[in-house]
Length: 114
Length: 114
Image (tube, rainbow over all chains, first blue to last red; front, top):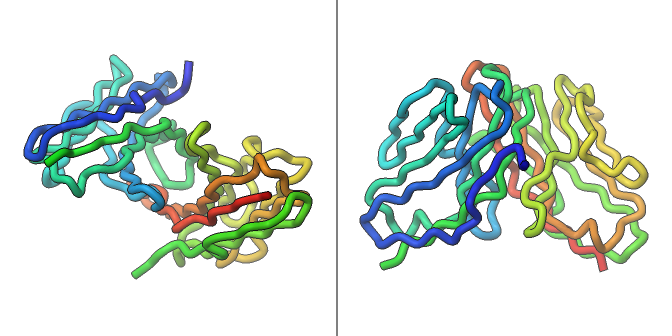
């Protein structure tokens, strides 16, 4: 079992719809979770992080965490063609500091169609 | 605008040659990570440093790869001798000290070993 698992996709959604990206992790001790977006040929860029169970909203993005189920998701509302990218889920076993290493999933490719 | 910088951005070399990649972390960040990304394996952590000291290089082939941080503003990753299977994009990322810190990625070095 991989430490961080994501469906590789591609996930296709129409413009304006809600895109739902999912991630499961195996280390029950993991405490912080990150979503990165990576455009083709570019480096990963941070979208959101979440530490506590529940939802965290930032603009059109909502991260959801359920530690009991070892599940984290990213919702993108009003999807735009510019959201088309690969979304990487990353897990950090400790709650403080970027100084701890992240384990990345292989990413889900999202395509937002006109 | 604080950014991680990497040089070179692109490198084409022949098998057996030495390759040196350089990274300048964001000023004030105390942790530096080296990743390798391929289509097949995704994003893999090779090594990371905190306060210039190596913390974990278990992801790195020791016989040909070496990573150093000669000062706080420079991290290097060397491959000697290079092999075609080393062809990948190599990312450097840096992280800070704060509670909500995460990792910020450089633009990457795209390496092709012929």
